[in-house]
Image 1 (cartoon, helix red, strand yellow):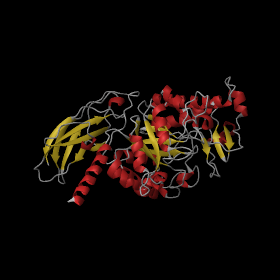
Image 2: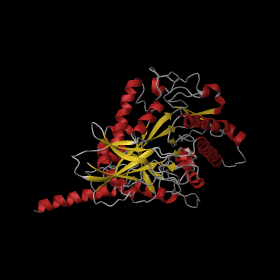
Image 3: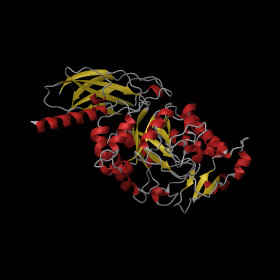
Image 4: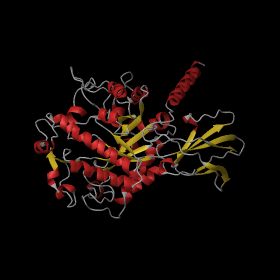
Length: 498
């Protein structure tokens, strides 16, 4: 009897954990990178098979946003009129894929089919990585070398030069104009990560474009600020619904006595003084739409404690959705401070959940999730992201909901009954329904569209296959519309026996 009672309590506790992790809206992202060479030399069929495995694993784990790296070093994972094909695709920069295909276009289609958003991830200023030894004749560096500087084996667009900032915005605008991307994403590479004893060679640029600044650090931050503002404005002008997100290094600024700049109780590298990235200003000015600081450290880390940094960012960066960048390998290999038999995943998720301003998580990286590192994929699928979730609202872009679906009906097909509906009418793109949410409620259950556990699908299709068990049980289905910003319409109801 005592054993039975203990098992019952354990079961009830597990249900409570799952119930606590059923938010209706949550950003659930994962990064798919190219510069680690994971796709190089696979060819079209091999790369598509690899990406399909990753996308299927991400879908099972509840991921709803995919950050796909499409520009790692002024190159392209798509046919670009400005930059050469990436060597991380074909093995040699400038060589098109054979058989010919478009990885970005293919990924957009695959993600949308799975109910995921696709955010095109670019590295704005990096023009050559350390391991690249040959540049294509069409690479922008070879067209005009004076626009770049070399640093520790890298080549970088000089952020001080106005033509560089405008050029990168032109590249981003081309992606957004030609592709149905849901977002444009950049990470933590602005000015280069500092190397001891190695100065950034921008004396000539400072003399030429100094703009009256006496402090070079302030001037460098100003250059990056100008770029972020210009990129934001460029994207809004092309497609105002495309989200602009930044994933900065996890430390904004280390606390110093007497400084007016907010700082965390941390040590080591920092955005403000080392990378010249003033993320808090970008949030204050409304130049970015979501913020994903890379909080890759462990709970209790001596230099940069995860718990402290979650609370710091939640306090200082609440003007835009705050997403926690999670490192899968470090999280699953680090031991829980209270129970060494467990990883730190549960504790990290609890800490993030404790802050109301935290709007979700983004996982580094997709390959680690796919191989189920430390059981991460299973944990997300069964506990933390077991039900579908809509994305956080962004009323600063658009807050008007689309109209509800029309003509909801059930049709018996050969294999099963299907729920069908028609798209609502819309006068402009911002009001158009692009996805639908399908809820299911049992007989006698109160209709509450705030209950994430009643969501059975988020789909871009206008039909859904229904489970059938003899036609003896009555259910109420409700279908709502989502626009590009995940504003949700009122529901259209249909009752059916299954």
